[in-house]
Amino acid sequence: MQIVLTVVLFLMLSVTLTLVGMKLWVRPKEAIDRVTGAAVTVTEQPETHPSLVFRELITKLGSVLPASPRDVSIVRRRLIRAGYRGPNALKVLYGTKVLFGVLLPVIVGVAAASSSGDPGNKTLAVIAAAAIGFFGPNEYVRLKAKKRQKEIRKGLPNALDLMVVCVESGLGLDQAILQVAKELEHAHPPIAEEFGLVNLELKAGKRRVEALRNLAERTAVDDLKKLVAVLIQADRFGTGIAQSLRAHSDFMRVQARQAAEEKAAKLGVKLVFPIFFCILPSLFVVTVGPVIVRIMRDLLPMMNNM
Image (cartoon, rainbow, N blue to C red; front, side, top):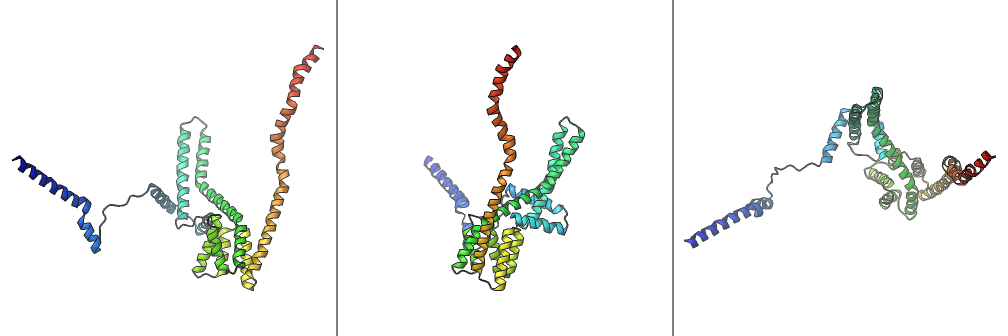
């Protein structure tokens, strides 16, 4: 009897484990659907990252803030110069302004309510927080654009020298721009990105003159505008590109040397105030201090005794 019960329990356990394994691990239906190409319905929704939820919230807030078309074009141009070219960059900026314009006054108001101070000062602090929260993102975009323009200006001589080498080795101007964008991708990413956009515009069918003018308009860097003007004139009048680039490279090198000499000449004037307020007081303390101490300790008591 015990043997029969053991066999029955073993069979029941084996069948149960087999069914569970077929259901959970083998899944023959999914394998058949995958082989036959049948559609698999997914009931579970993928989890959304919190940063994406926050960005979507800011985008929705940006849609609430009204703006005139003229202001939109100006702000969009600033965002492009700062390197933000996404389709929702403008909405994210406006949403950030709305969020900080509401959040900062609330935080400052709560902090001011719990402190004992003049009500007028509290009101001014709340108004200042609202102004900082609303206009702060614009200032951040301006500083970001200025920093990017500085990086472009810094990498332009290397890009120009590389372009001269590429053109003199036999490449055309379009291929030289593409090669510069590839070679400077890690050394100078901003200018490589701009040259890459020029190459994409040329592939899209735009004329070379228009693509170069768009480059100058996007960056708003004076040195790059001069380079674009040289390339357009060389392309229009049939001048050799290599010769024009070589002459402009020498001009930029001389201009950079003159700018360095100008900064060196201004250095003496700029050092007057740090020397006067920082170095001279400590120098007086070191040199004249011991003499004053000796006079007060020895000479003054001697004069009083006389």
